[in-house]
Amino acid sequence: MTEPQNTALKAGDLVTATVTKTLPFGAIVEAPNGMPGLVRGLGDAAEGERVAVRIDDVDAGKNRFSASAG
Image (cartoon, rainbow, N blue to C red):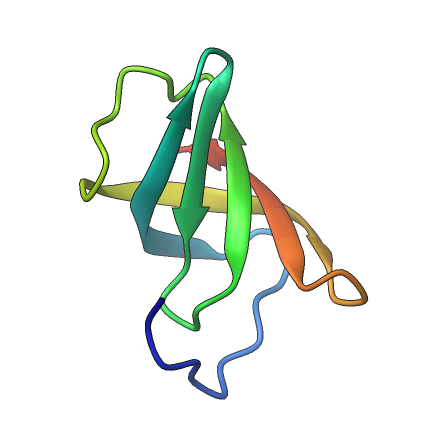
């Protein structure tokens, strides 16, 4: 996990995230600020790959987000 930055994510942001785990229905990614998130429909990505995602929702209480590809 990377060192968290003081960069808050919000819905609508476009960020480049790193795939940390692939799942049958999507991928777990890590945003530049270190926050993990789920991107549905990104199952063909490889671990370590950097992908462009659009933040759909941020759950600050659980320190995670959901996003869509590109």
